[in-house]
Length: 141
Image (cartoon, rainbow, N blue to C red; front, side, top):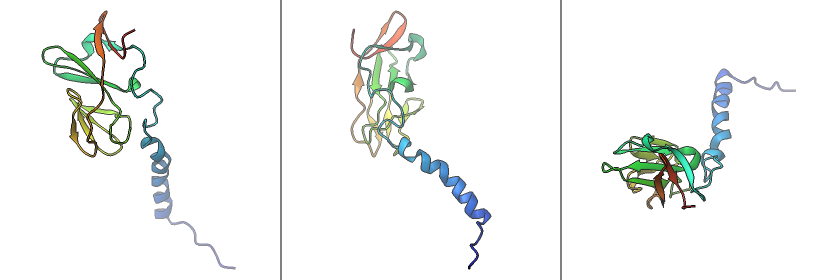
């Protein structure tokens, strides 16, 4: 009977390092990145206080898959934060650049335009308005 070799420290550490990655793979690259929110609001949704988005800035509302920007003139714009490349939920906003966690596509939060491939289509524009001091996105009631 041959003795089975024991696991080396390197083998154990390698396995431990890969376990979390293997478990996250399907969720991280699923069309919604593991979130349960719809790709776009299907009814009016209060996102936050009107003052949360500064002129020339943007804010990502991850729970609703929406990014809202405000131009220097004060005009609000909103876009779906679902990447147009593979349908992943974008979860990072760096100033006014949205960065998709799945394949690295980047979008301008002010215009919805693609800044970096692999995405080739701009983000979907959404209705947005200021109502009673709140930012509201989605179809009118």
